[in-house]
Length: 135
Length: 69
Image (cartoon, rainbow over all chains, first blue to last red; front, side):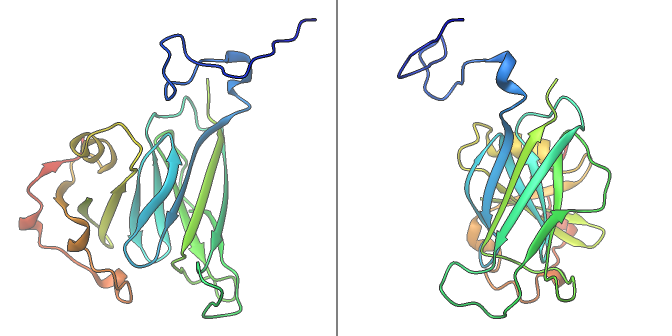
């Protein structure tokens, strides 16, 4: 057994944005993720392997992958935060989950709802993380 | 920058990811459904008050910037 000790691991081109391939570990790494503001003017806080989000209505969004996934065996993990401030308009937390549609390799449709009545709601922060879907 | 297109239920509004290397035109071509006409607008073209979000509409004649591929 050998151990590699290094402070920095770069692609052979020296880029700090072009990641080096680690085939044996790729399937354990995040495939795509995004965090966005869904109230007021919709905006993306940060993301990776996401080209855009589509606002389809109150609480209804699609996460579009920058690079299509290799297959539909992916897992979506999601969370929301109703407001950025210290107060909020109701005592209900928000839930977010995949919309009830056929999954595909290009995007993930999600729906944020109020668990008290399952009506769709906008949130200050919507976070989606995708694992899997790799060859 | 936003990309707007019509859906069966109203309109959809695409927000490109700031750190994505695709151009606005490439994002529009890729993320707008195939065959749907779209319009590219400034952020402030879209109302920030989402109270009536599900009632928003756009004239089809305004969607002249391209078609989803």
